[in-house]
Image (cartoon, rainbow, N blue to C red):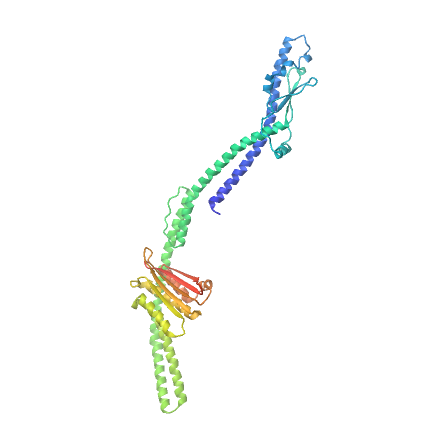
Length: 455
């Protein structure tokens, strides 16, 4: 999952949690606001009745104080204005059949759902009545009792919650959207870093990243640039070391070829001469047993000399240095074709201009083709082998060599092989700055090497 989506998902979770907390707080505050409204209504009505009490006491001093209240004027429209919606107020002691004076409770809020009406009182409890004395100095003046209407209180709480939730939802959506855009904008440079790492994985180590405003991303970008520089230096040093090792190995091969030619070649020639002499003498003496043994020695010597010539041919300087890449590849294929009529069919496909390819690139291409053909012919059961060599001209001037056969085989096992042949061509291709791949073909294996000509 992308980091931006993870951060946005976490942000949405946090917003949802905050929204839930805000809903709980709004529910609690709205439900308890009814208690505050009840207390306020009781206090206001008590203060109003206190004024009526002292007014009646001054005007009607001949009446007993216990008969002053409740005065008829207290159940007026002015008193109704002092009572909050959903709250009922009564005077104690009340007269017979006197009903509480209630504030307007119709249409004060939306009808709450049943689950809300049942859950809220269960968790938050019921509302208590509020009692206020009419006059703290005259206990006989009576008291005011304010009682909230339970259904009206829940409706008011539901209406308040809906209003708060609407605003909270709009704020949550705005915060989530703006924060998501900010996160996406902040993490946008991460894509440039990933692309730079992907280019480095393909061998383009000199990948300069732009300067980032974020200090953390800037540190990552600087580390990536430094890593690319060190990787390029390491690859260059490794390639130079590999080229030097290949040069030393080629010198050793040439020295070995000289030793084999001088020592084994002369000794084999001497053995062949002695065998011919023995055969001639035995024929004159009519000693056919010795003559037969001498002929067998001659045949074995000829076989050893042929093997020695093939070995010297592989050890000496490759043909590209003498004939050029195209002619040496044609000669390589013709030599394999001429060895036996039972050999698999070898198809050579040359594309592009190969005439000016020389030096290490030509030698590497020839060695890759030589080793791949040798492996396909000696270690597989191929009936048809194709050698495709193409020069990919243009900005990326490179040489593509692909050898494909129909002899089956496990590409993964061959790719993991640590044989000297594959190891050698891997080293040569790496020293030339190229790449080597071993993949399954339709009926066998496909070995492909890309050698940059500008390297």
